[in-house]
Length: 471
Image (cartoon, rainbow, N blue to C red; front, side):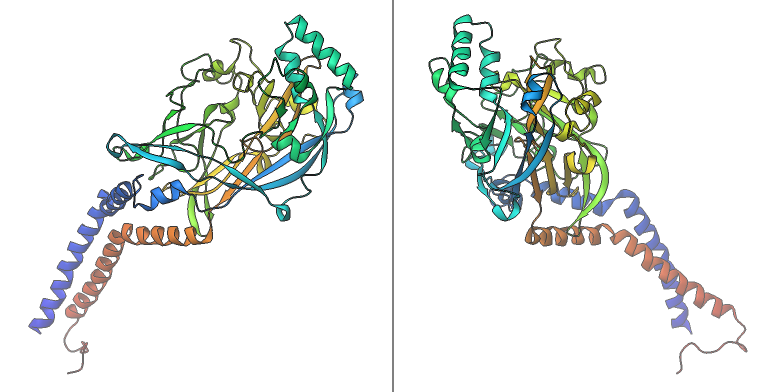
């Protein structure tokens, strides 16, 4: 009888202690902080870490999907009618992008690298071949006319060459030539005035890098993990008219710092956009069973300065502002009249959608999205979508030639099965550890129930009491 009483009261005391301990650990977030500190120590760019291996050679396959808009009424456009276009594609390429020439600096707090990209055509994932023909604006012609409009001699040469060779504002191209380069007849005649007589949207960009990067390793501050410190030897840009717009913010978009919250902004620097952008939390997602946060760039990123005054520096020359949703990238595209936007002018002023027949902007297909695991900062899924437009001054509208993605079309990435399994195991283990206080509380509650049951039985008269255990 004495032994049973000791057990009952011992259970009661243990119940109270477990409840106090569990609640205290839950309120203090002891195990959450333990997990966070462990992740912060492990997610660092240094030899031997999983984070460095993934950063140097990302395992998930990356695909580039190029779309083109085929102009169906070139003669009518020259007479002032709205262009009518039909979208063709995608033309899909597998992108390989390992970091090379990796060199650690400043006691491992920074790391230098280049990021060459190689593209291999994937016919099974494409709707058409590189031999397909597309009619669009002749960018070298438009660029030459714009660049030498104030030089009478060169302007006369351009006019004579165009007449002699029958060159117009629009022409047909092979998809492969338009992407990777061809010898342009006008540039060939102007070789003494231009740097190259070849042109292509990705000319000299296959198996090449976009410059020298220096990244922070995250050794001193976990929030600096993979953040860009310098690009091509500079810590800021010089294309735009304000200090804020010239800032190089964030990572290259391939990785992010661990312990991401829903309230923060994820910054990304894109050399193709010639600027930094940011994305904000939109919703919770799950990719291959791994939980994640979805971040998307808000409309304010490309909004007119009347909506977002911080974008005043992107008006080039100063004061020359386009409508919302457009970015004048001519300052970083060797003077070519290139205007960047989202595909189909998604989130741009409606007048741009109305000016071109064939536009159908929608969120699902034309929005840039970033799905990231908040614990590790690993990219689960991403879709970068940007459209390249050519501004024809004499026609007073934008005619575009390709859509969807930052480079300049559509890039998609989804975490591979093997990486997803590893990450799922890490997340599951972390969830178990984080929930230890609640497990302790549950055990405490269970002991409390047992204690109450035994106490009630002890209060029952002995004549009505039944033995709990047979002797």
